[in-house]
Length: 277
Image 1 (cartoon, rainbow, N blue to C red):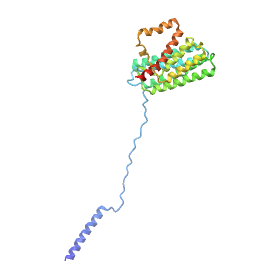
Image 2 (tube, rainbow, N blue to C red; image 1 turned 60 degrees about the horizontal axis):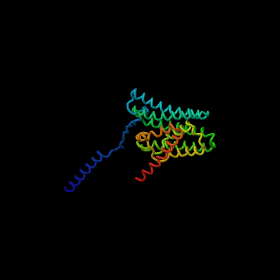
Image 3 (cartoon, helix red, strand yellow; image 1 turned 120 degrees about the vertical axis):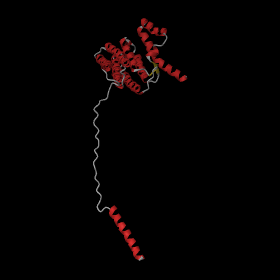
């Protein structure tokens, strides 16, 4: 009887195990249904990059167009200066460069006053400056020096001006801004000096002196000497600002040379003074 009971228990456990195997062991392989998930496709961006930050009101758009028109006017006058210099009208070409300087200062002032300053405007202004002050100014200077110095020497000096102007503009775009001083002579001021040199007739000076002055001005553009901005210069004592006016009435050419030489020398002086402090 005991043996039979044991067999019966064994049989029950075997039956139980058999039911478990039937319940949990599939007789056929399980087929998995794979549902494809749609992958979202990125729609092409249709919105163009806004050149004018902020609200796009009619008045702001008009102000933005006015500022860029001044920049384009500077660019066009620089191109005209090149054409005039090629035709031999060097004085008129120099006058166009002076007008370029005026429009270059006007577009920045208007952009700040009207509140439409933008990265696009800054890049456009830099490109226009390269055309007007980095290319047109050396071409006008080359045309004015053609009869007084060897053409090869004039070409090298003018190419040096163009290269230094490009370096100066590129460095200005990526450098932190200082409200008091420029790092090196600005291209605008260098072009103004070159244009006024031709306009007031200083191109009749000895050729070696002119080449030396052009080379020195080009070097000053890429130097790290601090040069005071116009707003800081206007804060000088009034009697000191009257000296250039009196000098211009006595001898305009000599006064111009002294003013330029003083400004160029101020950079190294301020640099040495800062080193001592």
